[in-house]
Length: 93
Image (tube, rainbow, N blue to C red):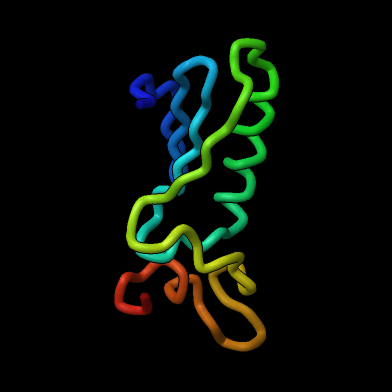
């Protein structure tokens, strides 16, 4: 079991228990991968890559599903009129 949380991001948590690292998506219920989460994932993977004591990675997620996929619309508004609330307001989920 991974018990040592070393870094909590906004959208993910990274845990280490050598020889394993675990990245957990923390935006249930759908764990939609937006630009923030992608940046956090990139940073987490880069930090894991630097650790010689880590030989495998476990990906997991909070909630009933791993991920609904990548968000296709970003920002406070778009030409299509879809707002950021679509991705952040629980009433849309």
